[in-house]
Length: 285
Image (tube, helix red, strand yellow):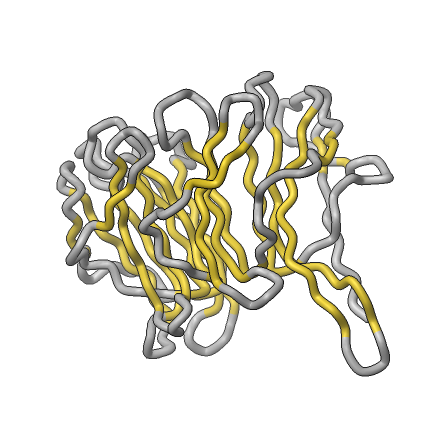
């Protein structure tokens, strides 16, 4: 039997050259999960970081089979790093999940988009708005394609001050997608047609201004519809128009993660890329 754990490691006061982490004291409120996602945000406006987790857990075992349940749970932080599960949230449980917070309607509160499989095997994408006190309401009739095994990334791609979103993953028809949705500032989204993005699953997405024009460019990694591992970089013209940047040196990966940061302090964003390459070997570069 496999045991899946949810472990939180906490850092003490900042150190000069390194940070030492200690495991969260037991009993931890977090449920052990797999096929999971984690996202931090201050959902109740008290100035500390709360956390939403989603994924699968085993609920029963026999000699021949096990029962798997998809869950999504919100934990509130008391300001000292002690978390308590918030009961009776509206979130549907998902696995093979992706979670991203952003203030989609401009009220200053962290809203959240969740994708994945529910316990019935239905693929979904659901947006929940936050009243500022950590009370969430599902937004009905959104245009988002339902996906699993994907990624979500918010960014203001067209410079209008509203959080737009790129969604990748497997849809209910088994197709690999990468779709961009722009936000009118009130939390109403519209799909952008004819984007150059290649559809992927087992994907990771990250926005960053790589060419210094003030607009967020985007890197997409994952497995495309032909089963190939890809890593494609798309530059933004500032108005939300993207073009694929050819001849990059990036290795195609899937089932990994990508993150941008200026690690050497020269003012340009650097990149860490992980995942499986075409030969099924994991890399970090």
